[in-house]
Image 1 (tube, rainbow, N blue to C red):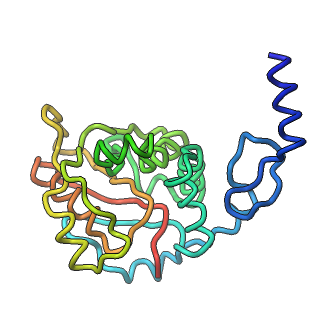
Image 2 (tube, one colour; image 1 turned 90 degrees about the horizontal axis):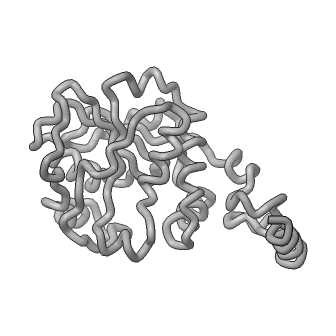
Length: 224
């Protein structure tokens, strides 16, 4: 153990860990994004956010942060640079800015929007699950990570317009065989970004078809 700690200390002196967002030197290699960057993330004004239409098949939706260049850098490091710990920290940061009592109760479960198995193998993890883990840690709300599956390996939504995103996500999800959600359960879909809502809507539609009565969504960020 002492040798490992010594080697880690020497490595940190020679190659100091840097924040994946701003390149600021980090005090240790246990964190990936510095506290200053987390604190700088702008919140999405709830009054302004309520002007956004709620995607079809959802009862409500909340996004915590405003999608700007800083958030984009952080979520890029989460999704494409192999840093799942960013997702857990993101969930904790989301919980810090939310009133849990207004979102969850004893019948609420968190359901991360699933990746297709091929994409999950490529990435090594599902970023939505990591975010949900942070929320679970803060709230104690259970996660149902295997309640929904992605049966279409859809192309990335990044460069598609709203109509193309909706077509891309048609019939993309299905409830796993044998999954039985109680009628009174409130499901909160968890994802990183809410843009047009096509992905969340398709996931909610699959849950509705399985008899779920209340489906909400919570995402880390959304653009104006």
